Structure formats: C-alpha cells, structure tokens
Length: 309
Image 1 (tube, rainbow, N blue to C red):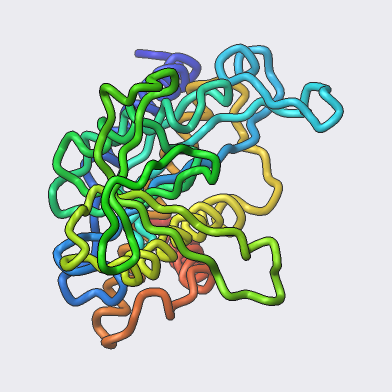
Image 2: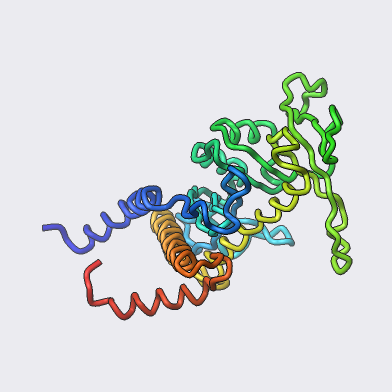
C-alpha cells in the first residue's frame, strides 16, 4: 500500500499533464453563428497574446522559469511563468494556451498554438508578434491574419487600392532585396481621441486578406479593436480569478504548471457558462459580469463541497 507521501508525489508528478490534457479536450471555441461580436463575415475573430504569473521564490522555480529585472537592473522578487493564449474575441474564452519560462519570448511560445488555427479564423495580434517567419507559420493552416506592425517597418507601396489600403510585402531582417518576401495588404489609420494625444500616431495593420471588396479597410480597422478582448480575458484570469498581485502557491515547477492549467480550466468553464446564459436571454456575452459569475460559481462550489465530483 503506497504511503500518503508517495501518493502526494504521484499526484504532483501527474498533475500538470493531466490538467493540460483535460484543458485540451474540453476547451475550444464557444461561440455559435448567432453570438454577437464573434464573427466578421465568414471569419471567427481570434486573438493571441501573453501574460506572466509570479511564482514562489524557490531554487527550482528560479531555475525553470527565470525572473525579470526591475527598472534598476536588479532581479525581481519572484520568478515568473509565461502564458501565451489564443482567445475567442466574442466570448473571451481561451481556447488554446501554452506555458514556458519567462526567458522565452511570447512570439516563440506562440508558434506552439498556430496549428490550432484554420481557414475559418481571423487571427489578430499586436506588434510584438510581427515577423516574416511568424507570419507564415500563423497562416500555414489557412487562417487569415490581421496584425499590427511597428511604425518603422519598411512597407513599400506596390499597388494602391480604392479603399485607401495598398498592397506591399514583408521581408526577413537582412533581406534587403526582398527576394523572399510575403505579399500583404496594409491599412493605415489614426484614432480621433483628443483626450489622449499619444494615440494620434498612425496605426499600421497588415493582413492576408488582399481583396478589399470582401473586407474593406474601414471594416478591418474596426474589427482590429476586438483584439483588446483578449486583454480583458487575461485580466479576468489574473486579477479577478487568481486575485490582484497574488503569487501562485507551488514551490515546484510541476505544481506551478498544474495550478496555471487549473486556472485556465476554471476560466473557460466560467466563460462557457456565461455564453450559455447570454444565449438563453438573447444577450451579448460582453454584457454579463465576469466577477459576478465568478462569485456565483464560488458560492455553488462551497455549497456542494460534500458531494463527489
């Protein structure tokens, strides 16, 4: 008969893999064709972004995950695990995710998620993900892309389009002759926000959708605003569900990963519940409160603690 300590060690050892497999089997897109804000034409609006979680200051966590430096160049108080996620913009449901050390860039971890994309997806991303290799990897499965690009990126005008956008190409760093470039369509616009002058600089988007008639520039610029929904989803996960400025509990890397996958499972379950409730009353899921739903779920768990899962 195994001892209690042996059972505990086995649970820790199997925990991350089991919870990761459970997330991969149960998470996924939630929106239906009738879900408000989830679609643009034939495309499901998806976004990718990353965040970090503080983890306990142990030698094992430090060695596995690493830690950032403060603005003074000193080591921060806690190591951090990095999480990169794909989210459905219309429901805030995180459909796929991957974990890694803080020392691994978001754009590197993102490559693990691109296989989840298909021809019905329109993936939006911020400037940190742009790059020729990333672009091609993300589009390899047939998904269309709508990414913001840095203002200093070289985007020569190859052909102007009637909607104000233009065809151009992106090349790898060092490819001055652009011998291995990818054709993109560029959309440039500014935000009219007098109260925030820092937003008056032009936004530059690149997309794989080259046909301006099927997706006019003004409509794509408006749709890109939906990318911020993943920022909200990650804030729900970190601030409201985990708790503001809270450190994860486990002093071992396996326990840290187990806890992160657990948080991702809970967030998806709550967002799925919210979508069901919104659908039943004919409402946009964005109109429902995540914090109220979270409190309701916690009360129900406490009320039914005596029952077997």
